[in-house]
Length: 341
Ligand SMILES: Cc1ncc(COP(=O)(O)O)c(C=O)c1O
Image (cartoon, rainbow, N blue to C red; front, side, top):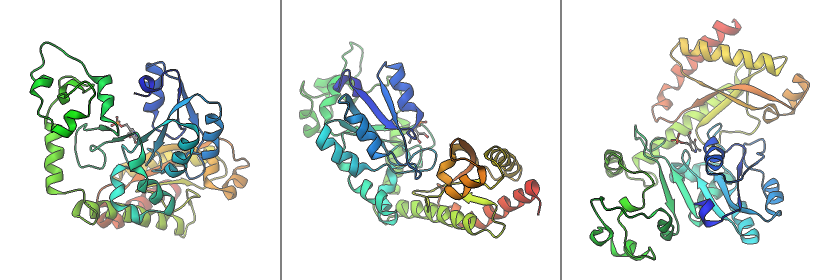
């Protein structure tokens, strides 16, 4: 869509945006520019503006909930730049979109970003991440349904044609060329209807309403993340170093091991990853800039440049809250395995 609606113009997104943006831009031969992120993992607005001044950015990708640490990009500030420079705003809320339901519990910058989400041009959300669907169910939503003309195709063998459309009259009117059937504007061809039906059924049972059961589940996962982060920060052995920005912006917790060098900290993270898995605690590894862990660590490591391998835990299930003591016990046991008492 970016290529069609703003031909010849670049797409910009944070260096922390999901790799898919850069990859699909390369496949489609669209120029993509990575914008540096700050120590909170948020896109740097002044770095974005430097690129915008060059006058050839057509679309800015704003991520609400980055893959690595769940950072929430400064959407309000990007929207202000849109007033001045004119570009499309695409929000990647694949992971973080559902947090709009509990945005009042998030930090102030994230809360402001979620409050502005209805001003953007397009949004991606993945119900197979936080929406309880166990199979691919991603959606892209456009403010202007007229973009359907870019997807629209006609084929002699489709089951339904526009003339037989079951769309409501308001939706029918929205495409300049007249009513279309959804099958005519989907990028995918044959696909199981099960995913859509399952999502619908889930939302019948657990409606997406603030303070509802689904929203409370999200809040419990986030509470678990805050508690894990707190325990890591205050652990008496002092061996763990959570991100300098705190607390976690959504429900993803990241920390590194304290060590003489970043290389050693990375080795320890990998050893602890394996030791935890051996105890059925399945963490993840993530490579992050060393500078995100603050000046104290940089002095110990002798440099702020470079990256370090960290441990990452995504506490996305409501059950993580009641499981936290058991998670912590396994983690500390894995630490004894690797680091000694
Ligand atoms: C922010 C974000 N965008 C996009 C994606 C890609 O989603 P999928 O792997 O379902 O295509 C991910 C996956 O982790 C993500 O975290």
